[in-house]
Image 1 (cartoon, helix red, strand yellow):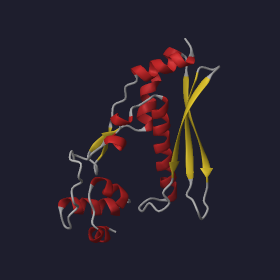
Image 2: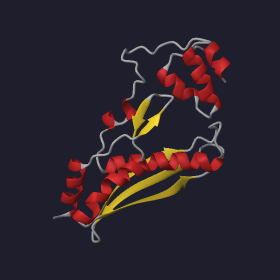
Image 3: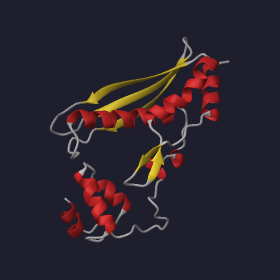
Image 4: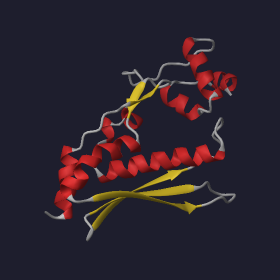
Amino acid sequence: MTLNQKLATIQTKFKSKKSRYNSFGKYYFRSAEDILEATKPFLLELGVTVTISEKLIDSFNENSFPIIESKAIISDGENSIEATAIVGIDLDQKGMQMPQKFGSASSYGKKYALGNLFLIDDTQDSDASNTHGDTSTAKPKLVKDSEEFNKAKEYIKAGGTIAKIKLKYDVSPAVEKLLV
């Protein structure tokens, strides 16, 4: 069996539960660790290894932010196939120490590199398809002193971003000012 056939076997049989829960967005998701755990049964069976490599491809300068390139690699000892993900590091993320900012970006990059390698469909991933319970095309308005507003305020205090909140809610400039 060729490496392409082995990879295709994993891609078609791969199953990984979304065992992690995002309490702010109220959705389940899978992590890089979940994906790696789900691939382990295939490794010995197919005689392959899966590794991840990372490198900083852009570092600190006044015009950019750090960028990590994550590569997921499958190999049979002779040949290899790789998939890449590129992730920027938000240095302005509040509520996180610098190692947490890099670690968070690293985890995200690994997850998407593995997702690219194993063809984990974006439509199955909460990061890509989650509507946070909103099935209409218009986002609900975030209203001052509502339960949602108070949750958003706590989210910001814990290090969350206004950009993430705006993905879920229509936030007026006045309400945004109150949040930050």
